[in-house]
Image (cartoon, rainbow, N blue to C red; front, side, top):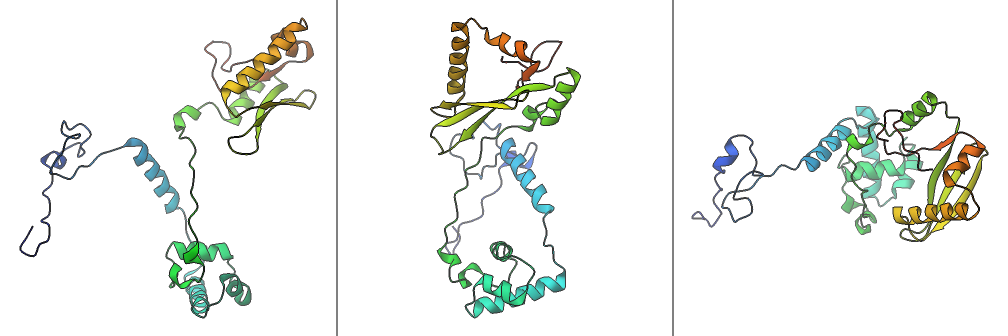
Length: 244
């Protein structure tokens, strides 16, 4: 503390003034340290990079004069207690109500959210992010890759498997679409898991076996179709797995 009671600035850690400039490899990273720690996390850094790359390409589709004119009209209307929709419709702004709210939350307008009678009462929605999948795992698994596979192997029909989800966490319908006859059949699953799907397919195999039909022979008797799978087969002849 200095004589005024303010905390003195902490000197930088000697390890941070040289490469790699982070505390990831420091032996003291898990114990109390008087210096400010700095870590590098590849996943977070990559997400921030992609976010910055996307935001750098965003902009306001208005000229300088039209933007300031829109800001003046919206700000004056809000200060008089008017609703953004009424302001937009009565002045022919050329922007939607959602655009006005978006510019407001990004700080583009002269007014702030506290000037809006209802915005301050709104609670931000919770965003549930999906499971992170590295881009490297998606290589060779696009729809274009599937099209190339069918062309190279002379496959003209196949079976498409999908799921129909209702209530989150509830039951799911697994569908099998036979493109050769445009026929679709659905199976009810207790939940959307690979275990439930595998158990249902195993039950179908047992049903076929009880009638003297092998599951693998079913599609061979009708036409040459394949069930496209995202996993690559470890053979020299083909790169796709055929679960049937």
